[in-house]
Length: 286
Length: 293
Image (tube, rainbow over all chains, first blue to last red; front, side, top):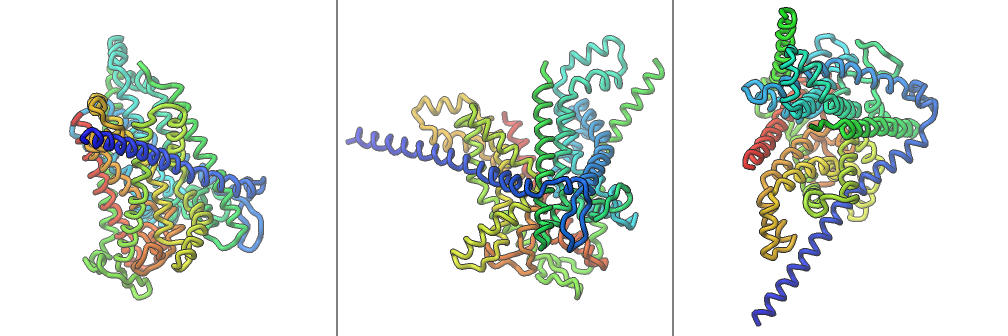
């Protein structure tokens, strides 16, 4: 009697176990479906809209068919470039500080700040850039867009730099010190080159992150139907033109939005891929 | 020797200055938001949180519908995401932690995490919303397609890779000896998961959920495109609504008078404070966990 009971219990336990395994496999694989669907639709609808005009023309006024997003592509590149110029020096220098000062009050505060910065919604960062730059200068501008994107990329750059440089062994630095190399040269000529892959990965990942950001640009870069490279004037960006055209009622514009989406996704995934290759190929190993 | 000494001092100052800038950045953000939302705080006080009319024409601003919209959307998204995120974390961290399928799944999650928010938005608007519309027709609710439910699904897809990767990490931290001890007593994998892995990594998984909740609260573009833009307090999961972030995204550039702008900035301030609270809570839970090991 007792033996039967345990056998029955074992059987039920085994069934539960099998069921749970199947459930986990099923739910996990199910999450690949949205990815496939998203990529499929972006590719299918995007490829139909891709032509030379899309890359080399600027948008046509409402009512005319055709037109392209060349101003948005160039605008995005300008916004990203200046965001890098603002964020990289501060970000890499802060990363160096954190890797050099593992404990210490300032470093602790900074670590928490960086974590918190990373969690701030992008739309709020847009408001900040609006208050700091758009309001005093009384104009929407490319540079205010770059500032908001720079704030977004800062935490990613700092964290990647810190984490890579922490892995550089002390013996390497000591060897350099023993040769009489001054501190700043040890950091710039020994530590930083040794951890270059991690720093580079951080830069690539953060650029991929800001390339697709729309919310902080809504009221900073603002968008511009014309071709503009002026830093102090509104500028168009790829994600922003997608938002504008996708929410419009014109089918022609919606199609351009799909085309622009394909360009953006290809660009972002390409950056992520390079980041992966860089971090694998030049991994810091000692 | 002297000049290189001087350079070293300059170098040290530069990196010190950078870190101080980073620390002050956060404080400066908070103060700017607070100052800019002052006109609205003075005018409405606490009634900003309880008021349910948002009427720029008559200058009445109450944030309640949008706070409810934000919470409802994020909580629904969170509930949808938890089973999937936990399954993926167990799949990658415990059940099949190596091999081609595991690599494929973890690359897929990385891809999903890398897709920009606006792309989720355009996909949600043109692909998911029509599907939801026919679903709504089938169950007999107004077939709008857009609304809280659609936004929640999109949000869930967006936060799953994030919470799954945190949960996977903490599940990977469970000591082998503990699991082996349970197995040697004859426990099945399900029992090990339930009685060893979950109790051990529970607080870490919880922290991951908190962090993804913070993310869901602030997500803007994807939600803006599928939320349906309504100023009323949502009365069902399918109703159109506005979240705090979608309202800001839609109205900020149209806001003309200073109280209007200031009210929108105060909404941003609310979002800022809430996400920081969740971020810090999540961070400390994880930190406590790593100290334990």
